[in-house]
Image 1 (cartoon, rainbow, N blue to C red):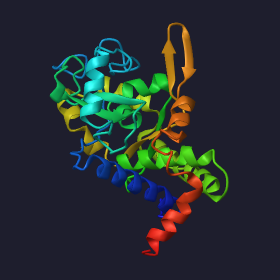
Image 2: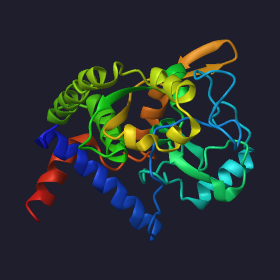
Image 3: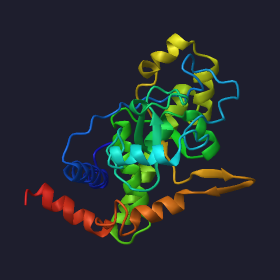
Length: 266
């Protein structure tokens, strides 16, 4: 995907948000590398008896107390340790070594919902929250910033809304190349392959085989509560756009002006 003005504006927002986060914290964030994979039920193996569609994530089978979660969020400044996105609501806790039974604080990190699901492909199918793209030229963390910018801008007005729609269309066209390469753009199918058809050794070096494959977050996040299902993403998006949310001080209508002022060196 070429760096069109549309994409440049979206990448600009990604850079401005990350820079703002680091300035607020006054310190460097040590990033956790994103690798598509599965959550573990134990520390010995990636294999799970309940199938690839069941989630071992902290959000689905929450073994963390509210107090511990809050402690981790505050320690990390509510900032994703993978991409740098800061938000005081709708963040997740990542078990760094993949073992959800390891509750030591050194093994816990704040991550955004988009980064979290990359480590839990087995959860994506249930939530209907992502599709696979062939996008080797864009880092997974940058893609998450672009997705947030697209979804925020798309429901605004003016040129930035049209730019967001065009950017989303361009990204969705990258589903076809991944279908040709691996036969699917479905994250659930990839999770099943990782679980059932790879040895532990080959799973440990999966990043070599998955290079160029990205998980694009969709504007859906199906959550089950009791016997009910609902799409949580509209709530999340509304908070992101609110005055207290991470996009509150950067309305989409200003993005072109921000880009032009930085691009011109003023």
